[in-house]
Image (tube, rainbow, N blue to C red; front, side, top):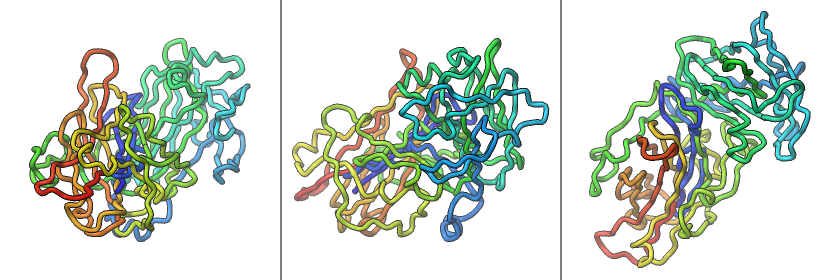
Length: 428
C-alpha cells in the first residue's frame, strides 16, 4: 500500500512562502506535489464527465518573459511565447538577458531572459474557463543582469486581486534555499472575470522581475472538501464525526509535493499535462525510523480515479514500517515540514495498497500536528479491491508559537487491532 500526501496552504490571500507539498504515505509513500501538492481545483463538471473527455489542460499559456520570439524548450518539448502581447501598450518595462547560466538550470528557457519592472505593470491573460481554478507558476532566476543588481529587487505580486508575494526578495529566498532558481506555484480560485490581471509592484526605490509564467486551466483536482484534523475521536471511523472545511473559494500555494518511497518525477512524466514535479520524501523523514522503500510487484491502474490526479509512478512505490509487529506497536513513520504560522494547510494523501486482499489486514491512524486526522484507515475496506489508487484530503491550522517558523508534523501509526493478526504490517 502506498500513500502520497499533499500539503497545501489554504487562504483567500496566499502567503509568500506557502508551497503545496504532496507526499504519499502508506506501506509505500508516494508523492503526488504536495502537493502537500498544492492543488485545489474546482470545475463545474462532474468527475466522470471530465475524466472521460480530459486529454490535457483546456488552457495552456507558457510565457518566456523578455523573449522577442517564440522559443522551444527541446528538453520538455514545449514552446514558450514572448510576453509583450500580454502587456499594455504604454508598458515601460525592460527585457534583459542573464549574463551567467548556472549549470543547475533545467533548461535555458525561460530562465536566460527576464522582464524588469521599475514601475507597476500588469499582464492580462484570457481565461478560457473562469469557472475552473487556474494553475499559475512563476519562474525566477536571480542571476546577474546588465545594469541591475538583483539582490536589491523587492516587489509584490497580485493576481486577480489576491496578493501572492509582498515585498519579496527573490535573491534572498533562493539563497536561503541554496538554489540558483525556483518556482512559485499557486492554485487560484475560480474568477467572475474572463481575464486574469497579474500585477508586479516594485517596492520603493527598487524593481521587480520575472523570467517565466505558466497558466493552466485546471481539471477538478479538489472536488471534495477536506476533513479538519482533530475533528474526529480516536475510536471514530473516517466519516462518522468528521468536519469538512469548504475550500472552493480559497486560493492556495503549493508548499511540498512528494513521492514517498520513490524517486523524483519530472514534469515531463506527470499526468494530465499539468507538468508538476514530484520530489523524493527522504529529506523530510523524521528520525532514523525511515521504514523500508518498496516497489509494487503488481500492475497499478487508475480504475475510478481520474488520471490527472497523479502519475501512475506515484502509486507504484511506498514506504513500509516493516514486518515486525512488536516494533511497529511503539513506532511511527513521521515527516516534518517547516512552514509559516497563522495559516491553514491542506494535505493530500495518495494511497494504493498492492498487497492486502481483504479488510482488516492493514489498519493505521493518521496524525497531523498531534491531532487525529483519520482513525482506523483500512484502504482495502475503502476501495474494495487490491492495487486501487485513492486519495484523501485534510486541513490543519498552524498557529504561531515562539520563533519565526513553525513545524508541521505528519505521523502514521499502526492501529491497535481488536484481534491479534499474524504478519500485520503498515505502509505509507
